[in-house]
Image 1 (tube, rainbow over the protein chains, first blue to last red):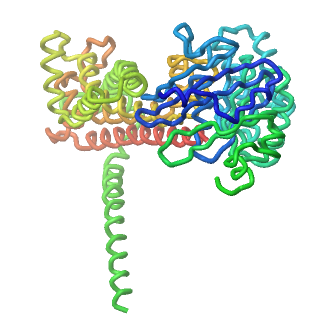
Image 2: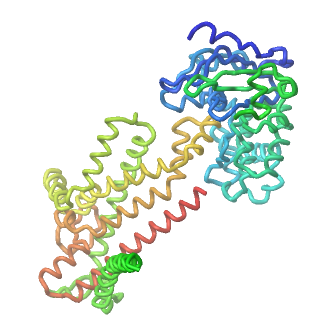
Length: 275
Length: 276
C-alpha cells in the first residue's frame, strides 16, 4: 500500500483516550481475496470502556471487529496488512496462537448461538476446554458467569434444560455468560441486539454498563441511538464508493462525535442523510 | 368455461397419478399382509425350518440377517463418519474432494450383484474368510459406506456456521469444535443415515447370497455361514415348496425395514427441533 493509506486519519482524536490503550491498531488494510475491504485503519481502543463502531451496512465494521480476535483467519483467502497490538503484543505475530487469543478476546454474535446442550454445559464449555474438570470449581465459575450476565436468577432452577429453550434475549445473555466464563479481557459484540426483542435489548445494554468496569467492550451496531447510549468512544466507518475499501472516518468521545462531528460525512450519517 | 374445464381435468389427472403411487404401495403391503399374517406366530419367528418343505420357522435366518447387518454397521460407521469429517471439515475443498465424492456416489450406484461378486472374490476366496457373517458384513459395508458417508457430510454441513463460531470464539481449536460441538449437533442426522443404510442392508439379497452362503445355520462366530431372510425367501419362492413361509418371511422383512425407516424419520424430526 502507499504510505498515505497507512497514515493516521485526520479525524482520529487520540486525546480522547484517557486510560490505557488496550488495542492499538496501526495502518491496517484488509483483503478478502482480491477485494480490498478496509484501508488505513489506525485506532486505539481504551481499556475498561465501551467503544462503538458505527457506519452503514457494508462499511467493514464487522470485518474490522473480526480482525481483533483473528476470526477472519477462519475465512479462506483473507489477508491483513498493518499491525494490531493487544497490551503491546502484536496479535498477528509469529508466536501468537489464535486459539489463545480468542480466549482473551471473547465474541458475541448477532444471532444468539447457544450450543445444542444444557444451560449449564453451555457456560461450562469454555472452562472445560481450558482444563477445569472439578465439579465444585465448574459450578462456581458457571454461577459467577451467569450472575455477571444477569441471567442467574432466571435460570438457576432450570440449569439442565437446553440452552435453545430460552427466549432470544435470554439466549444472548447466555452467550455472554458463556464468554465471561473464560475470563476474557475484551468482549467483541457484533450487533448483539439486532436479533432480540426490545426489553432484552435494554437488559443487554444495562449489562454492558456493568461489565465495562472489568472488561473492555467493543460493539458494532447500526443503531446510532444505541451507540450514543452505551459507548464512551465511537468510531465511524464508511465505504465511500461501492467496490472501494472502507475507511475510518472519525473517532472520538461519543458525546462529542454525536453533538459536534468534525467530518462532514459523519454529520451526514448521524443526522440520517444516508445509510 | 373452457379454461376452467381444462384446469379441472388437469387437477383430476394429477390426483390420479398421486393416487396410483399410494395405491401401488397399499396393494403391495396389503397383499403381503393378507398372505403372510397367518404365518406370524412365535414358533415361526423362533424355531428353525424343518424337513424338505421348510415347515416350522425361520429363526436362524433372522439371527443371520441381524448378525451380518449389525456387524456391517459396526464396520462402516467409524470409517464412514471419520471420512466424512475429513471431507467436510479438513480437506481443502477442490478437485480431490470432488473426486472422492464422485467415487462415493459411483460406489452407491454399483449394482448390488456386482458388489456381491466382488465380495466373493475378495473376502470369501482371496482372503479365505469362506461363506461367513464377516464376509457378508464386509461386502455389505461397501453398500452402506457411501450412504453413511454422504449423510454424515450433509449432517456436518447443516450445522450452522454461527454455532461453530461461538465455539472458536471461546478459544476452542478446530478439533475441539468438531468433536464437542459439530459432531454432537450432527448426530441425529448421522444416525438417520446409518439407520437408512442398515435398512438397505437388511433388504439386500444379491450381496449376501455370494458371501454368506445359503446354508440354514444359526451363526455364533463371525466366521460361521448362514442364510439371510432375503435368501431364504428367494429359495422358498423359487423352489415353490412353501409359499406360506415365503410370504411370512416377506412380511417380517417389511416390518423390520418399516421400523428402521420410522426410527430414521423420528430421529430427523427430533434433530430439526434440536437445532431450533
